[in-house]
Length: 318
View 1: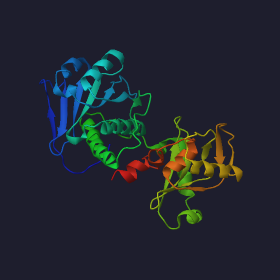
View 2: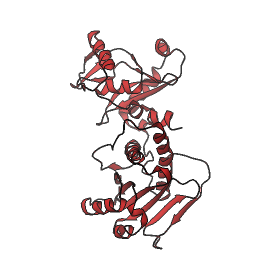
View 3: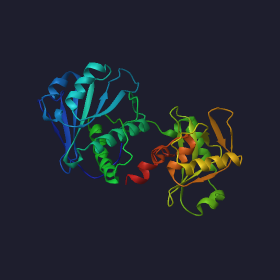
View 4: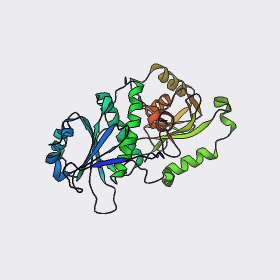
């Protein structure tokens, strides 16, 4: 959960007077959203509220009978009541829905799509739930930066209000350092951080980072240069052999030069990847991520610090 030490007053409203039924929560000052908790059995009752006709994102959660992680589905819709009714008929696992109703000037499709994508990414990073989503949400590549900052503020409210309802789905339940492959990589990064990178970064501050593929295997490791926003991609990083035709031509030329100079060799552990034979400087996090995975990636969301946080969260969410 995102920590904020400023005092806040939360207002909880019971639209039908039942504390075990539908509950709505929001902050009393500068509220951007209203979060509504809806037991599955009361979906029809929710449909009678004015918020049911609004756009928003939503979370479907089950209540596991044992210590296993709850299952979570995250979605967005222009009609919350209609969409949740559809899920009542088609998705069996969930017992409670949480609807996020957007307020003020935030009721736009750009806000809606970005909040859905952000919520999915941060739920995956937290690891508190088993995600039921088949994709990572919609992405508008031409979204204005102001939308991103709006969504960061809105997400902080979502995170806080979900915790108020005892549903901290975005809280990290386990340190990445407890995962053997991650711990080995991180420890190696910390131990080997010497002046050997002075040719790339001089005395500029460097942050140890790594990135993983969908199977959770670590593919890239390196250092993020804070002042220049560059990535030092380290020797032994994995470089995918198959390359998308949409990769920028300049990055493709870099990759081809690595091949010609013998800087890429076949991996003994994974036939789909090369192994990088020397450290390389990449102009942006996205360039480094794209060279590792063979297709366009938002590197700010794929490279993680040793605390498990994305570069986007650490350096763009302030």
